[in-house]
Image 1 (cartoon, rainbow, N blue to C red):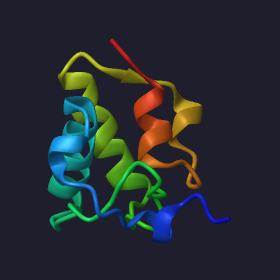
Image 2 (image 1 turned 90 degrees about the vertical axis):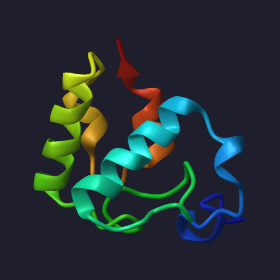
Image 3 (image 1 turned 120 degrees about the vertical axis):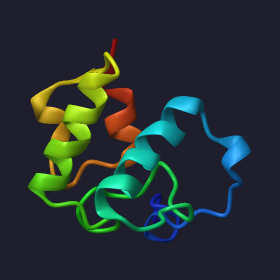
Image 4 (image 1 turned 135 degrees about the vertical axis):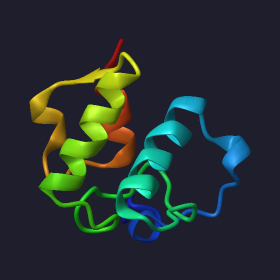
Length: 90
């Protein structure tokens, strides 16, 4: 069974996601200048979202500005939004 739920395309409403998840997804929307509201925690950073290394660096900087840190190894291309969220620390 494919656990990526349609390559990250979920049918959940935003009210079902945590505030932190919505922040992270919103940062990627801002950096990539496109809506990502149809993506869930299974969405892969590169393949599903289309984030390149520059976009990931911009999101990382935006997280750091908010006092949130992510280890370097969490930014792997195969990483998911949910996996990245799990790696965020204050």
